[in-house]
Length: 478
Image (tube, rainbow, N blue to C red; front, side):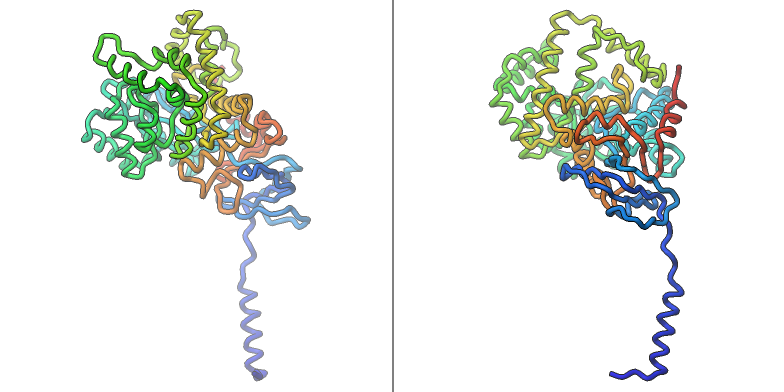
């Protein structure tokens, strides 16, 4: 078809007008060039990459080229290693109103160690946590993203303040109603006084509502009962360990029968019997069951080691103790007194138990169990320092037998997936949140390289090593 000269000129004018009306691309907020990007899913390094960030989100990841991209800030990584921000999947903010400020001052310690997301495992500072989240989202407070369970579910006269008491089905439903009104991220159960029936009932009721559940299990229930009721994760290894004994059913029955006596049996009373009857074949079946039901495990090896060594370790000269508020340090007294009162036999057993726990971790990994890296840091947990303790946890995971890549997954993509946040976190991809950490050396070669932080980017905000030092110095107490 032929076009008239007038019509052709009209098309040219429209095209020129359209081009003239196009706005130049806005500069990125941050461009990181020449980075070795660690792909945690594929367990590989993508060399010489450029990562473009705008409005708190990763917009592009591409091979670095010679052409400079428009950016408000550019970081030449010079071959350093970029990883997703770390997740600490078990922390606590607690201690009541008098410790609100002291807990808030822990937040910079997480960022300073490359942790950009944490999972609060229940406490009594829920309103404060939601307030901090709002402040961080508005750029008024520096700290990691906080996923929280809000108050724990427990039985009558619970150990921890702020817990919701559940004994009956009606109380369970009311408690879950209240947690959903709060818009918590998951449900945490605790075993100090909760009954077997209430524990399993709460797990099943939460499952019906589509809520994620984790917890400390009462020893009156078996692990299989909890898993088949819908438990999504087991905190610590005590409960998985019990299921590794072929005597689990008889031990559980003995515990149940003792509840109505003057000397009810608890977790620590029966641990020696479980240790003596541990069986490798039973353990393997237990791990396969966990993997089949996609029930995750949070090993918390670091705190177990710290507490086992507490009777013989002088922490007075710990460098990080200076960054812990004296009010929080005062909460350590109970555990310290308990440790000093331990017999030599108990101290020896705790170390044996720690070694057994270490051996379980690579076996669970090999069986396909999802492992989540958590420190259990926070008030009342003596000398388990926010930030540093997660790095210690990862180092112990590798010492136990995991590869650095497997340990890194436990602190990145596994955490994001567990909290259904994998579409926005856990890996370095376009469309993900701009939570990344630039390291001086490759963590896939040595997990301790996580300690060599050059820069942390959280919500797109850049924190240099100097910035991080200044942040933690601001909360130093001596």
